[in-house]
Image 1 (tube, rainbow, N blue to C red):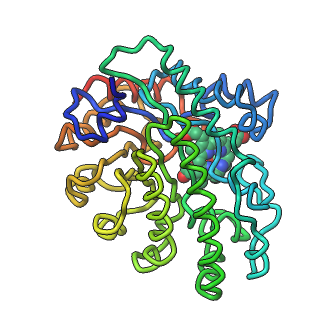
Image 2 (tube, helix red, strand yellow):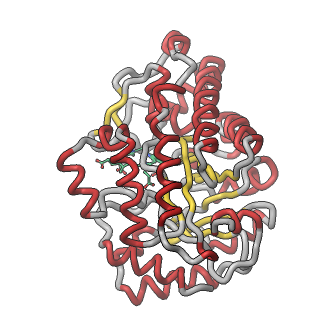
Length: 345
Ligand code: CP3
């Protein structure tokens, strides 16, 4: 029996879409905050036992259809010689700002992050133990950062909001910048293939800062590298998805040139406009505004129903937020969102 996630990628008609929430494992959950009193974020990620526990916490409490492995997009960079920390936002200790910095980056992330695929296989095992109706089988999604977004974190001096420093670097030292993107792409490619081999039902790449680029720059600095990774996922026999924060202006380019199976839409546009623009080729995911989870249960239920009614097909759609859940979100409101989706179209 296939999982809801697999069925939606296959294009099967569904009585309701699968549902999960980006950043569903984390600080809005009291049980996560309790663990954070004892362990640092990196300790939680690096211990397979703790990362499994944190990945399963939202499933136990909110019963979504899809688990996401607890990790961070920056972890594979450690294997390239980049020193990272979280405070709680990302801290890069050795910024990359010159051609010689780039040539000192090592190629292999492999061994340093074997724990993430391991957690995926543990999650898969846990999900199988949950007594779920056959027609609502749960699955686990793996993820990684897009090369452009990772390049933003390692090269920009901050604040991590606009990344103009990265754009200046990209355009003033084009050749070296492309070499850096190439190295990151190799590392991320190996990393996601290991996640597929561990049992991930799909892989989502986060290009959180891709939306700052116009289509021409996206085509130069992000798309070719994403496509290389998506091709590797396809060859490994798995489905893939891309999330860009602020993607409205990029949809025409993605429609013709992106080699992924699905696109996750942020909260800024009507979900059906995105589906109409992208056509039947792509699964579409999204796009509940995470700030609407601060309203009343009635309002959340109504807005979820409006979102589902706006999806003019009963297939190739996964309900989700338009970006990660905010850390101050009331848990019961997140529950209302999940339960509202489960009521169906
Ligand atoms: O979705 C999940 O539940 C899995 C866990 C997950 C984390 N980070 C855990 C985390 C995922 C999928 C990510 C991806 C990630 N990390 C992205 C892409 C998604 C997006 O939001 O656009 C980005 C840009 C990062 C980088 C990052 N890591 C930031 C900006 C921050 C700090 C701010 C914040 O939102 O918390 C982190 C730290 C981080 N990653 C935390 C968690 C739970 C907080 C650490 C803590 O608990 O102290």
